[in-house]
Image 1: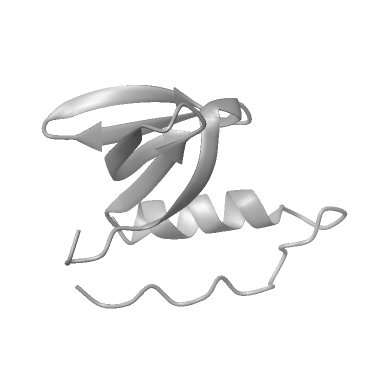
Image 2: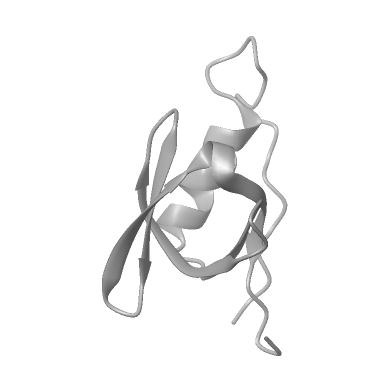
Length: 83
């Protein structure tokens, strides 16, 4: 799996057309990147983003769709092959 490039700053400002969060989520969604999402509870979810809105993300993992509230996310990033 190739390494995910850093998000570009095009339109990635709070006052611009989008914000950093939306740009990143759209990019990893389009590239079908497998993500590791660490929740504030200490649990982890691994999968691909199917869709997202202002408050939630739908993650596809093992054939299931999971609704994750953004407020429950501590960190999000690409899963590595070693994990």
